[in-house]
Image (cartoon, rainbow, N blue to C red; front, side):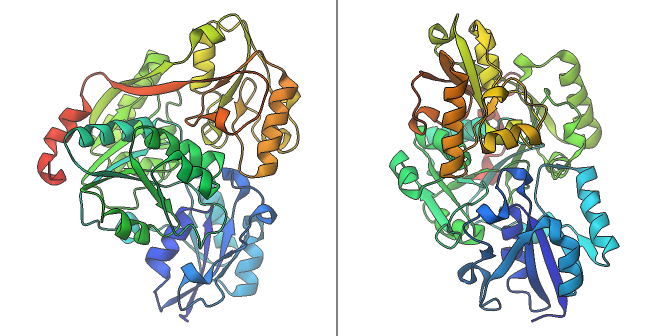
Length: 446
């Protein structure tokens, strides 16, 4: 093994990708451990079915795989393993948070490193439309759906590649292909993964995901004339984009300059799409626009609404419990999402505070995210957590559950009250996404 000893700090996603693309076959380095943070909805380490990146994925240089240890042990790992370099490899955290981790590594005597796009982005043999964001919960998937629909309307074979955090048996999840809801059911994916996949499958688009995105790419591009990359959190694209659209959220103005690697996405974007303008105030929209123009003056700005629909008659005049997309309202720092907007727009008589009803792991979630006071995050990263979600809903005893998550919550939970699903679609105002594709027709092979 190499003389440079490395620890990769991660959250079960970009850390594995950095290892696979940069370190797995690098004879000059030895990765002695991953560290795992529980702060991005991946649970405590002792809840993970894999405490080790498996040898089947780690390669010939790692016959025993690579240990995955708690991030809290970083200093001890640096000391006992003689670590030279700490690599930071997870997303949607503040710049301040990144530098706190850098300070820990430096104080323990190690170098601190971020892997740049030229090292970790892979070249595809087919064109790539990449949709990313400055924070989680900006509306990437509705934008990726629109691009996939438009490309299919142009008679192109489209495959969506999605990057959530992988769970379960990592070796078995090396490459995942989903075409139907039955595929999801058989795979035993979590709520978060369903939030990422279902809306694409409902539109008839094949979705690839997994752990080894080089292997994912090799398989996906065999059946696609064009790939749509639908990025996780605010992560960088794993594939070199021929068209790069980055979303910003005027409900969280200023975040586009304060979070990693969202600001990098902002600076790399061909287009910045300011979404949700129909529910934002003018000052928030103006702040985001000014920040975009100052930071990436070459990017064109697309202004868009996120239009929300639901069964208004089922909501009107009732006591509702709002369930929102988990990552958006937890580590994404949003206090609400489409569910609460729909509950208010359709005239709910009362919006129930879910915190007093929370049980088990859901109580821990409210303790960890004190900004949550009107919505319940859709947490279901294990059977136990899904049971806690059901019990919390029953304890709240609403007339109706308003589900603002991107997946069909009613398929997963067994509760007595009706579940009203909220849907949301992108509505560009000043520049149609079809026109964007026309402008890049040569690069995209259209």
